[in-house]
Image (cartoon, rainbow, N blue to C red; front, top):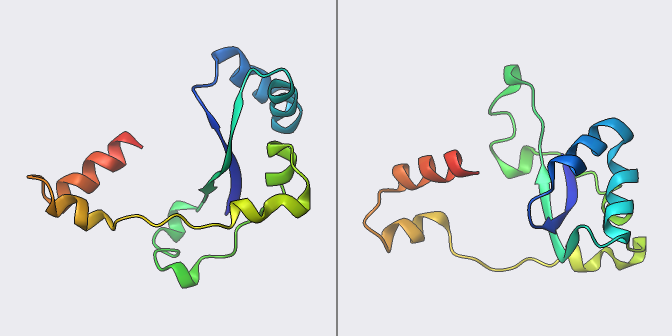
Amino acid sequence: VHQLPLFSGIPTRELLQMMSQRGLLEVVSQAHAQKQIKLVKGASVLLSILDAQRFGEWDRAELRPNADRSLLPQLAGIAQNKLKSYDDRISSKPLNSIAQDSNISLVELQRTVNETF
């Protein structure tokens, strides 16, 4: 499980090709410095990679390992002591409350969200 900074917009095909050839850290640092990509301050994503044979193993939050945050300061271009902004939790509604407020079932909403993201 990795915590990575979030950048706004869609990366260009060229930027993605450079990442695959030269490496993520080098390309993202250079693109950020040249203002080709813009950091969304305080926003990040959690990336979990799990072998299909272990599917479902991390379904419960207490079973998930802590996120590796080592790339966060490097990719975001911030000092290690400035990571507090990435710890703040933003309150939000549970998914089932959104389904209750609409004419869509929770199962249909989850299916649509999973297909979209």
